[in-house]
Image (cartoon, rainbow, N blue to C red; front, side):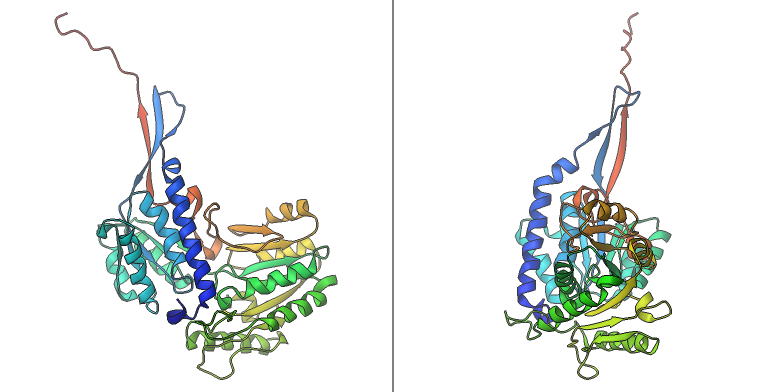
Length: 396
């Protein structure tokens, strides 16, 4: 991961451990999650049976090259499906390593295959009758394309797409802790994470304090060689991604955004992108409407809690969100009004095997992880068994 997409080795080791925990979770729980579910009806016996669909194509991104695949593969394979992996073209060694890991674990070779192909061949796979379903983690455009092709073939899809997660800080929050967590969240994977906090919606009384403290934490983070254990964030995955992020920032500043922390690229066509903070984020700016996939924090001012929820929901994305407040009951109430697949109150948004992961609106549909994730790629079959009639004696 460090060599192919710039993830610091310390983060890479943590990702590997997370993958291992996910595999262990499904090894321990899959049988329970897939057991026949008895349902009382007018039958003598009726139940829901969970049976595999067959071959599932996974189109996966480069930002978490191992975790994105394992969180699909562990439940799908435990359910009895076959996995075909079309990984991002810039992480081929990660893709081949995953295949080797599953084979080393004892799975028959045909149960999991890495396909070193370009995106131009995805349609051919989706239209092959042997492929029964597909899952994609990636951009909104890629998701729309895969969903359209699969839909024409009447095939099930799960999509986990972009996000522009809201991080709400109310006036009664522990601002010091919120600001420290905000900096960590924005810098997950050098800011290249769907569920990294991106829009920081702060009530006016604590706005300046929050910005100042977050700035301090961001400036303290150390960039460097991804192979160096002391590095806290590395370069973006490719120079063109840094160029595009720079353009989004420049356009937003021209449209009225204010730079609170200067950073970004040292020069064009280079991958290192230092953290930035933009404030005065308003409708009509690219930063307001688009996902910024890199270490740029966007500050939005909220009049009150209700206004904060309004701003959080004023996005075409709906993946994750966080709410920071001293009143936990109020935080829970607000969480129910946030349009997203997950809301964390007073905590860092993250994925974990126990909770379902996925989004709403343009962030996709379907769920990965938890018992819901393992039931996405199965036939949820209803079985109804009537009462047996006595067999008549043919001699009568």
